[in-house]
Length: 485
Image (tube, rainbow, N blue to C red; front, side):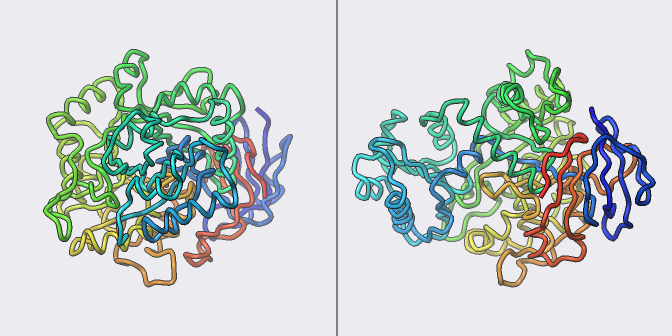
């Protein structure tokens, strides 16, 4: 492994100008300009700020890479408008007859009308159309697309488990094509300072990433999450969370074991103590305690740390109770609505709050409607931080773009448009947000792994809007330059 000298960088927020010497993938020296030593390769930081490399702790990588090529539906204000967006795209970019039309990113929580397969059939008679909601918990299919997955359905709008299983049955591009899309997406992530991702794709992630690494060097480290249906396979393989996979140069590790307790806010399936405004529904309990706890116990006994999807306050209580009863640490993914008495339990039980701050400004209007009266404890990052809870940031891409600066800006500002901050008491300090977006690393020091980002501007000098558009000068992963501007 070649040595690298990173010249003319300010180490940390408001740091002094320094050179940083990297040897064998670790920081060997930090000293004044011209004093850190020599290396076979150098990188000019142009006076930028050197920070720990950024980590996206929750990505659906294959879906994100595919979504970047789907019809964007995030601006849709109704079911009818969604169909109009699909038609406008196809007018500009015609699809071959019979080819599956794919769209992604709609949010129907505030729509005045209801999505239905007949709307797609009327607009595109006989054409297979599959539209994914932004949170990936709803799949809207045309009659022809329903036939592709061998299903009959009264509305063509599939939720939760039906959505997930139908998604897995849709036609997909060949592996080599998908791997090419993933490679492009990872290069884009490296350009935003990302040096590591945690891949929550619902597939055999270990096999997929070994294949991709064999095809092309990776610009990021990857933690390979174990899906529920692969628990026995993971145990047979001897996988344990945190283990480095052999013959991967330290770039691939075994991730946690993923389980779902409930659904999502936009689909109104997040499992809550109270009922959704105007309904008698409390959401959907996907995995009751009597099923959740044995799975967590078995995984933990075999060295696999549980990562439990819980969005509603009742789902989070169930997840925390399960961690306490099983006696293991782990992670709760999302933690979007919490009872006040459950906030401190994360720290007490050693449970990481793996959160996606960009979801808060995206979902504030839906939360105001469907979680009316509860929003003071929704997306409660400030309360978790003040209680000493370990927070880690992710995007849940493609639910939000794979860009940690978006998460940092949202956590600090609690808004992403011209509106006032939403529950600003739940904002986080910049330093804490940077650490949560860096896998817990709060500084750069000699001996650290050389996963680093150089920003053109000191983040402390920027407004939240400026943070979101942070210019990245360079990214270094394992001592190797993966991006330069």
